[in-house]
Length: 139
Image 1 (cartoon, one colour):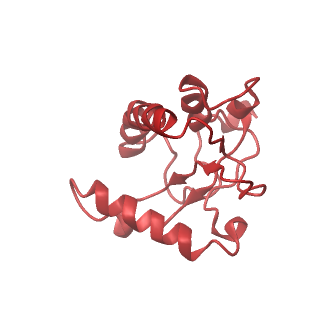
Image 2: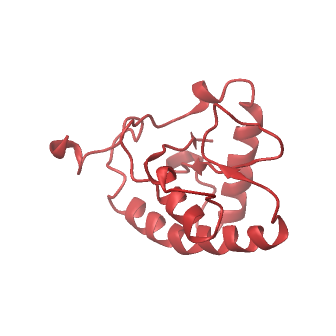
Image 3: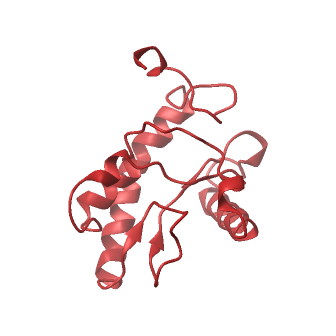
């Protein structure tokens, strides 16, 4: 297990998650996702959030997932809104089978999305969400 700590995830295809742009995007995402989730929490106080795409949809839960946008799938410098739109379209197109759409498969994770959820009050009890994988959509 220790030997895999600095290798790419199953599905990263070519470079580890922490190399170059991946490290930058991951770090920036911690601030951005926390900000967005905190704002959503104020607008949706009765809504639950989840990372578990296999149990979703349940009631009106908010499914948190990662968009893996790179290479030719990247809209271009500064086009983050188009990247998000492309990810949302890919998610919608794959609603019938999210397991097949999942681009990264890792059993042992430290979920940064889960950490952002815990920080912003989306976790009702415990911190099991920190070890829960999230859906990764690659447009």
